[in-house]
Image (cartoon, rainbow, N blue to C red; front, side, top):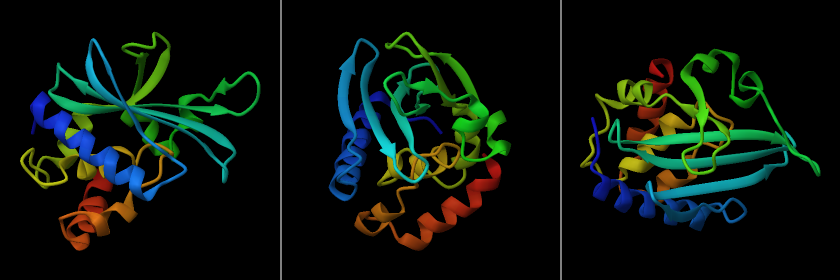
Length: 173
């Protein structure tokens, strides 16, 4: 299940707007580069005392969003954590890859877009309302990013649908 770039832009703006209205201390910023529209989030997770850095970028190759991330220790020189410590749990290491960030030119991890496609293919369609929210709920399970469960109540879809989506796809990813 792919998504057109135009639909991606529309959904990304909607997702960022909803997220930013709920998580006031963790604000996504929208930007535009030669690769197109993207969203960036960087914040200090005070529970784990780690800097979390995320990007949502459209993949022209797969015609889907991709979730890129890094996790750093705080300090004057931020040290990037290895993948084993950057993901939520050890079993998620195989769900991620590492590559040079498309426009930053530094190493970043990303959640394998093929695995996300497999996980959501039966339950999320590109024409669904809140496509990006549903996609993010699945993609972010691998990372240390919060699950946007609070956004469900402000979403046009029912919370029970989203919860079953989250639980069903947890094993698939």
